[in-house]
Length: 305
Ligand code: A3P
Image 1: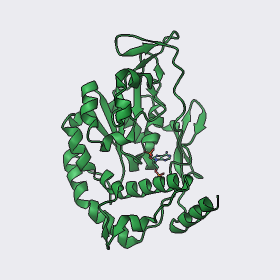
Image 2 (image 1 turned 180 degrees about the horizontal axis):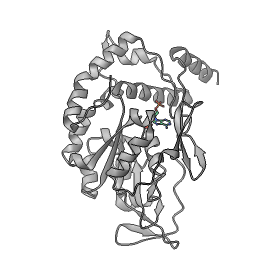
Image 3 (image 1 turned 45 degrees about the vertical axis):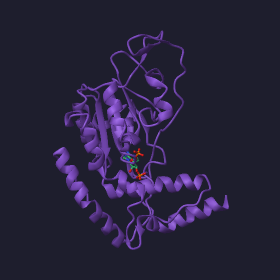
Image 4 (image 1 turned 180 degrees about the vertical axis):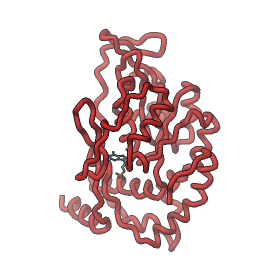
């Protein structure tokens, strides 16, 4: 207990307190009282069925994937899997086959589209081929944010996970820098090299099948970003501005659904640690070229530092 408190104290000392935010992660899957059919669905007596997803949120980790799936769930014709399924990236799951994957999906009405999100898919090189093999026409959503911000968010998540498990952690600057240079061995940096991973996806899917959501914009003003998502998915326009309200305490937009208001879990929107400006500059420089390559790949620019 003392170690946890000490850890939080040290983290607070390295981080100026920026407001934190939410998540509604990971409840149990619905009980399975149904029978499999031969058309890739599993039906239930009340007329709902489990179906393979027509939409997958493939990442990126810490890009805002939870916010995106929660906001998409505002739409009445979307049924979202609660858990991160990790079917295509974890061998132990993948080997169980599509019937197992199907069993992880929510019960949906026949006119609903099913969506799952597993942020690790984007950076796992074997995943695009596997998804393509399941459904070459699937619609993919990829939410990205400033690569440097994403690295800080990634560090923060690991920091809290380790703290909870009473494990040791390193201060952020010693993770980011080695011998005075950016530490290329730090895995979180690789996850922010978006063009590397995107190239892999584009070997299997046309650009038109992958909609990139601007995660920084989704934080700043979610409504216009969600309208773009609705259009990409060819959903009847339903999500509207009144579905979002800014929560000053949280410092983020929260959701309003049929009068019910909710914010994401406290683990979403946490304070990031303070990083010396000189190191931040190095990070911005490090990502400059990779970002340009990504913009060329997708034919679009983003407002990243
Ligand atoms: P931080 O916690 O670092 O701020 P993911 O769900 O993929 O793990 O992404 C988490 C990030 O979603 C958070 O990172 C936060 O910045 C971002 N986010 C976007 N919209 C949000 C919202 N409305 N509420 C909370 N977090 C949001």
